[in-house]
Length: 321
Length: 291
Image (cartoon, rainbow over all chains, first blue to last red):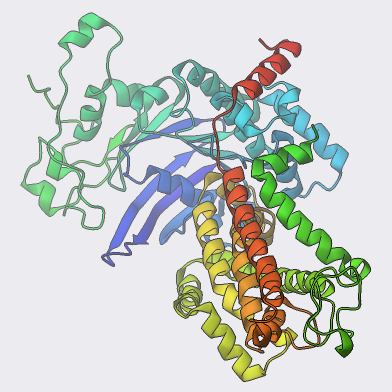
């Protein structure tokens, strides 16, 4: 349903004039009725990737296929039609709604934009959308500031459903919510995935959040995909040293295990995406880096689970004592 | 207590009453003037306070009170016209600049920088120098002089709003550029500009009086405060009343606009909720059975 091929997004740094490759040759795909996780640290380009899919950023190379149509090659109203198939859920539901509009007005406007001219039809549709996301009808009369974070995020989801999208890009949609609300919103996404057959790309900086919900996971580092595979295998047998170190940072709910847990601590900082390291992007921080890592960029291994590493699968980082 | 009065009280009653008074006087001027403000009576020139002429007459025997009242109208109309034009042009330039960004933004803002770097009075004088003195030329000159600050202000507001998720989400939903600009960005910019404009109106009123004082703005026999001042100047010693009255009117109007601007700015700013309002809200929730 959503297929991205070799997508690159380049920004020009105003101050230094350097090209910053926020996304560098990314390929991924999400099938209808599937929720796929995209994880990585802040600044690795995962949000840029999501924003490019819905047209908020300009791609410098590659293809974005939504429902088999390359959005980037189209122009004008055909491009608009194509990109509307993918909708975006923002991280912060507090700023994603116009403060001066009531919820009813916001959804009404979305329906107007979608070309529904009949006011009564818009009202009925707004009501059914509220029902769909599990909100009471009187919310329509409220201002955004009167709602809780979870309610606002539901409103944002309802509004994005106005155009009947096939793809939903969720940019850390639960990270600004209370932990108690997160599960409810996650369940809503799962419900939409199952009932509407939505293809959901779920962006998160936290592996634990997507562990339960995602069938497959992509791990990103410095603008590239490091590892991809079914959640089960990525979580139990991570192939890439970066994924291994990320997973070692996830706390365990059992205090006895947690006390004995050892983390893999990475040295140094993430390099500037303006001047990425030669060869493998991760080599400057990889405990298992060898000379080949600096001279040759690794290719993605092929298979169910694949990693962007010369030693995919053979390396197993040991936690520091 | 009516909502209108509550709003007025929050903005500040002195400001609202002062400007309200001037607006009322200006709007009804032709019907409330005791005499024709332009009709001369040389037999009754430079008269002091009297029943016939409550505030006296000027050197041509024109009724001072009538001229003060008509002067309020002239000033307010000129101020409103300039602010309206400057707000539309400046707001449009600023909104486009902030929305489009990039080279367009750079180019437009360098023009604005140029306009801001020259004092607006000098710009106005230059424009009048080219087109000649007169009422409409003064309006044009002041509009040109005032556009840059409105453009800069609205550009800043728009640039700060345009990348907020609530605007971006409209784009993702397929909203057109005009819809985003005119329904969402321009109103935000406008509300910021309005606060600035209400405080700025005082400066504008003063500039209009200055230009007319210099003989470059409003032309005789139209009644205007700056002109009344320059007409009265030769009689300063024998009849200071003629200088003091229009000067006082101008001062009060400028103070009124400044208070209004400050009140509006504070009105928009968030503030702590008072105990009374908190109790009212609690009662409301209780009645709705929510707590």
